[in-house]
Length: 332
Image (cartoon, rainbow, N blue to C red; front, side, top):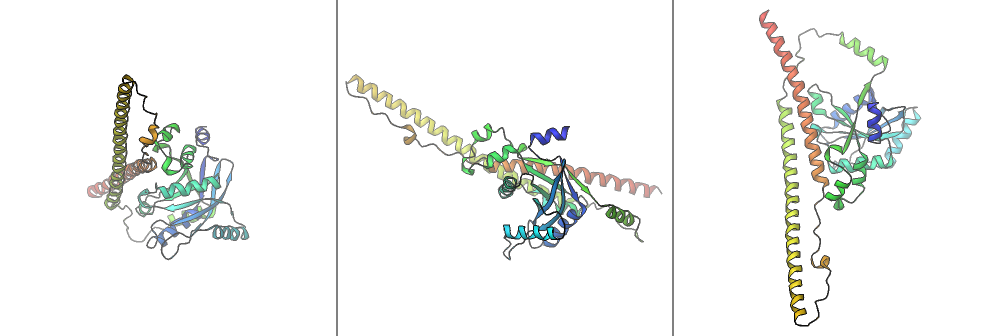
């Protein structure tokens, strides 16, 4: 019932995303092969909505040009869907995926891309895969959708995203995205293979607990500091705009007061009053800075803090486990 209520709240046509093990492995393989050539590998997701879940059954990578610029067109996507249809596979395009280290995916480009997908495909979802945390033993795959309020905000021109518009939509950085639960499902044959491999123990002792998490945390903190600096710059722009508006209001009040005094003097002399003027032409409104960049920066800071908290808790668990093993070995 709780999931159904959240689905109605965020206008999501399903409760959770079910990913086949094949999809997970293909995403990991693509990101591993292209990590030296492409900063953020991307690809398409194929599947269909069944009852209360979105099943992702296959995927394909997006091609890139030599310059590293994405060159995805409708012809390529349609051709890949037709090939999947010919081999009797699910061929419906239901979203896209992106590999992003440290989870720093909340950018204007990302938001506009997801907006285009949700406008054209109602059930579309974006899957975020973090390769760096996965290399340290923490498989990180999350699915997101834009909320209805975020779609209404992005439908406007970026220059018209004013504080009044954001306030009228009751939108904050916490309500930009809706995280959809992800469930990974394997076929019975894949489960049997995993059970067989778990019984194949190595002949020699191997270090399974990797405690080298300092580099990951360092990059997390660098990314977090960059976003805090970006948010500080946006706050400076907003404060500067407020000071300019306040100064203009003072000048406008002074101008009106001087005109009233002059009109009173002319009336005392029996002269006609000054003609009415359009104050909007004399004092042109100062355009406020767009509220989209600071909102995205705030959302990125929140998500980075959540990931740092989760990563630290898992790393501490490994540390305590290794400490217990070391103590037991010493006692023996």
